[in-house]
Length: 87
Image (cartoon, rainbow, N blue to C red; front, side, top):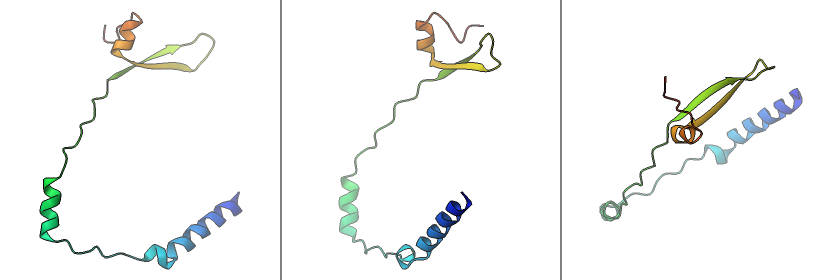
């Protein structure tokens, strides 16, 4: 296993030191006309839907020391007849 790790590390270092990895490209100059054109065609960003809040309940299983954790949204809990926010 140690030989595999050393070989992988050596390959990574050799690839990082190669001229292709260290070459940097200079961006082409941008004209004012292209800046105006791209500003006009910019599309509004789509908003991500809000994630539903999940509520987790830990159960103790008879004969086991491990806790069983179940996580669902409030609507899913209410469909099963359990309100996770009730005290």
